[in-house]
Image 1 (cartoon, rainbow, N blue to C red):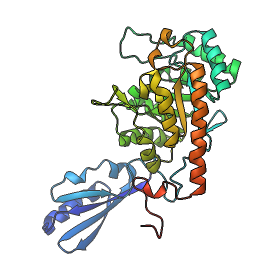
Image 2 (cartoon, helix red, strand yellow; image 1 turned 90 degrees about the vertical axis):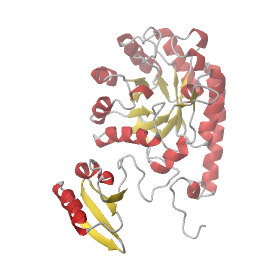
Image 3 (cartoon, helix red, strand yellow; image 1 turned 180 degrees about the vertical axis):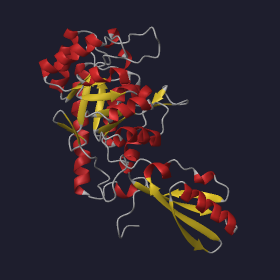
Image 4 (cartoon, one colour; image 1 turned 135 degrees about the horizontal axis):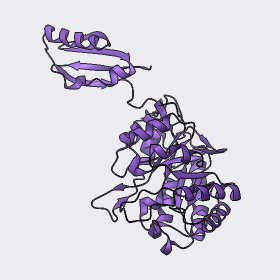
Amino acid sequence: MERVGLILVLEAGLAAPRRNRIQERLRELGAEVRVVSGGERTYLEVSGQDLAIRTLNPAGWPGVDRAIPLTPAHPHASRRAGSDPRRATPIEVAGIAIGGDELVAIAGPCAIEDERRSIALAHEVREAGAKLFRGGAFKPRTSPYAFQGLEEEGLRILLKVREETGLPIVTEVMDATDLPRVAEVADLLQVGSRNMQNFSLLKRLGALDRPVLLKRGYAATIEELLLAAEYILSGGNHRVILCERGIRHAVGSAQVILDLGAVPDLRARTHLPILVDPSHGAGESSRVPALARAAAAVGADGLLVEVHDDPPRALSDGQQAITPAEFRRTLRVVESIRGIVRRAEGDDPEFGHDRLPGAVAAPGKD
């Protein structure tokens, strides 16, 4: 297991017997302790095996002023020291690199409705530039009376789509019991917003040799998203892609606000690829193209877009779906924006680097 550490800052003037009790308790829990004295303060350098140290909560112990972690809470998800803060570690999905130089578009209907429509849509989004086809066979819906997906029939249709078009398949898994049959179909397994903290499902995905698209919960912090990813990564599955899909907001212009600031924040903290879902982040189709353009501008590695040939008649989320023609126009502009950003980064190796949250300025910089 990984060795981790932290520094405990003890209260000023803490009596020796109380300092000794804290040290003894740490050693009883399997930690190694080194005492450092500095004026009125005493500091304890604590190290040990991963599980033992991470489960401690010494910041609340009597006599402890504060605890300073020396290792991240999500070591597998965190960006490595010295790595390029503008780049992700690319993850391959059926031969397609997500997180590389190319912005990858994933498109299709929210829910699979029938075979003819699904195959036709897949052909259209592929011709427009999509690299993967998305569509839900199992649908988590707020209302129990809403369309829940075609389930097994939907999976069969998705297999047919891949056979007819060659597009890799992205589809959602909702329950750990469904994982084996969904994994037989999906090239990229999607964990939806509602299941971001379904820890039993995340653990099962960690033991699976299949890439996972993890969507941010609509009330989750960045830290919670990274810790959810850590569940999968720590299980041995190192192919995790993150997705910003919008968060709930009390005073915005819509119920859900796309948090585009999450993209540079995540980029500074993690090496994992980052997608943006402008459809769920918009909630209305008229907002989708603009948010897709903005996602490209802030450096997203890809987009997850809902596309339907007849949005008003869609069985799920038609109000936020765009047509194939709109998708084609949107993707054309998005690719141009991506090119501008990449060229700017190439011309200036420090482009955005010294302004990223938590980034250390390059030598000689103010």
